[in-house]
Length: 422
Image (cartoon, rainbow, N blue to C red; front, side, top):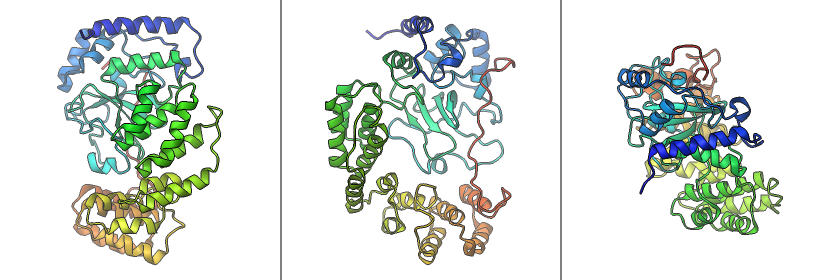
């Protein structure tokens, strides 16, 4: 028989009380500020008015939490955010009622914003259908999906970068919140909580070796390395997967994680550069070419991108074009200018708006002033909002300099406020 939400809430309340009475673990990010204390819950009438005003019904377990246990305070990140702290200042009416498009599965990465969000403009509905409920520092946030196919689930994202939404595997808010408490007690580092798969070591090892999803295999490897301790069995499984996984990106991400985390576990990674060379060779011999793996390894070149840009597969061309637009993609020192101009000019002539937008962004990134007249010609007839936005930035119409990087979103307001609750 499934547990009721009230049963789970009572258990969470007991765990919070236990956490308050114990010394704060050094790995409990943000706990020094909130001390595992919640501020008072919100009255039922206030929450009901909020739902009516925004034309939504909050997910029932989250609603129960904020009306019976606490509206803000102790929680992942710096603190659990009050709904009024993130919604709906600077939003159009109906922001929460519009469905969020994001689904469980791999992280939305790279050009996720151009694919799923409106181009920046006054009053745009960024991350519609969601509430930011935790801030983890800089532009890292956790959102609760209020409307859409993933209603009730939570996702992490960097709302000012390429690390887009990843719907964590906890089934709902209460499961997510209780896991946070459990991982603190177990000694996990809970910074940017939710990125780790909610599985024990045998389950993580099974995912690492057998799961059909490459991103989930890579995440299982990262999750193993986030454990407070790591035995020989897990370490050896990670080394094996790093050199034998059938997906080059999984190999590269495990290589990168093992380099970063080996000292924490008292391990060594011999010949890491030679291993990276082998993974790069494997990525270049794969079809499609493992561009993401080469980025992770720091070995991506224009020569790697060009064959993918010539593919008949639109998605492969899009992924390749994106590598010309962002900081960790093709190096600005790498390409010959004449070759680069041919490539970027081809993107500007593409029928696909996303490819054109990437072409414009590449003009800006590589400071290709010779192509600015072409951008002005394109601007006169362009109708796609994201392409127009990129052109305006590249021509300096949104900033002082020609090569400024556009900001993607405003940061939510301060969590604690003396203003009315909604």
